[in-house]
Length: 205
Image (cartoon, rainbow, N blue to C red; front, side):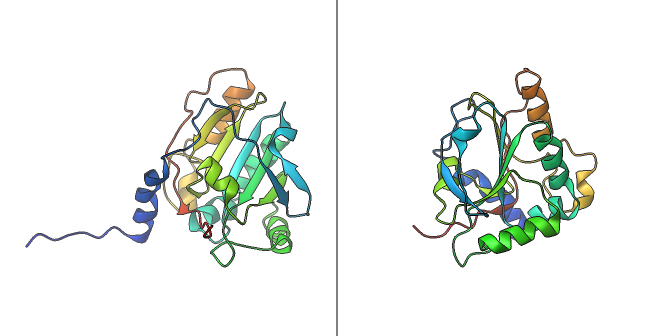
């Protein structure tokens, strides 16, 4: 009798991601505007950052793939490097109430402080409206928007699809590549990749 191999939990996370592509925002199109309240209670609107490059980073602090990039300091280094160059870095939480990764504004600020993270703002998307608008599939899932409001990159943070921090060294970082090229006035050579990580834990609507 033929043996059927059942994919591991992490394999399922990675393999199921393409199922959410239908209806996504196309790379090269105008990034949809939105307004969300941040962890300090301030309303943040994407269009307020027009004239700057913007990074949207979907997060879930309990996801092992997110832990990979924060425990190693990789995500914080990216945040510091590019916010220092005038990029607006917006970390977005779309976990629904009661779902993995959902935290209060106070807890979000605690996580930022503990991790020594440097986002421009940590945005709370509890009902998942913005995540669904962008078809954010995984944590992390990265979107890069240019100063004209065009989406120039969407996908994975890098090209090594694992939760092991040791794999960061030597990986091709797509976020750095996209920002470096776009900020230099060059076309983004890799503008669309398949994200990897934990599925975004949307709540019911």
